[in-house]
Length: 442
Image 1 (cartoon, rainbow, N blue to C red):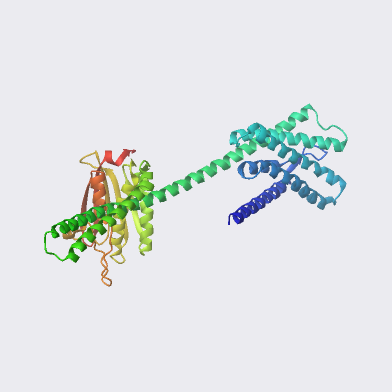
Image 2 (image 1 turned 90 degrees about the vertical axis):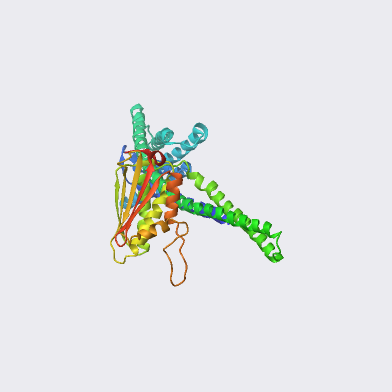
């Protein structure tokens, strides 16, 4: 399998090198004559330099040498179409090969014996300049031999240097532009990847909290079963019952251990990676709006958002607040979906609390089905759910409001208030100390 991959990589590399050689050769048609002896200043040298810089996994030496074969052949064919193949045409294009051969040889020497490191945009300027100038000198010397006279003098020597300098500056400018654009794309890609990872981390954060709660409940079951087993020793309870109590305690202990293993793994290998990451509150809201919009469409409901962010923050722990916002948005969308044909709207207001400027006030309002006042206290309880399937009898376990209360209360030292009217909608108001949220930026 490894051999097949290696062969495939080599094949792709060869194909790419041939494509580069053909492209560079075709660009040689864009040129102007500098001497009657056939010496031209061609675009191909510029194109080749850009390819050599950008395709660092390919040998610049071999690229130049492939062009040394392809470019003169390409020019010979094109010029022969006008006047037919002849010795004059061959002698006109053949010295081009010596330019590219000298270019490749100088490139190899500089990279191996002088540079001795991977070139950068800064030092590649000198590499390309030296190779271009050397190639020009080699080509003009070959043309001098063909013409039987010296075609170069001091002025022309410096003219070749100026040509090489001009082409190298263009290579530098274009390569820098390509690199800058590529870096922008990479940053966008990395930022998008980070947002996705952060999004997943916030999901894990909610699930970890549920598992930690379950660990406490399992431990309580284990303790009670073991206490009953100890008490049963002094009673006439059947041996099978005593053994069953001990088995319950042992099994609960094993389940607890499994839960703790999963929690520690998620925290150590995943969640802890984001502990020091920072993100703007506005960015978190934007990301969760995208997630909520996608959820709404999956449920057949288009959701309109109105975001009023009067005060923004750089969050110290973004994925925890992401869990809060996601649960609020999810509950709103499901409440809106419960009213068929209702126009779905979620309004978010982020501002400083008027009564206490040291509090960040987050208000989330929807136009969903609303909650009966008598039910508000119940929905705050762990495990409570209104999502009951009458056909199957299953209750959907939602993280929902209990997780919101847990994170806001225990992690941010904040409060959660709920205002709701049946048939009109629900408003969730979070008040969090600004020092717990992060750094205020506006």
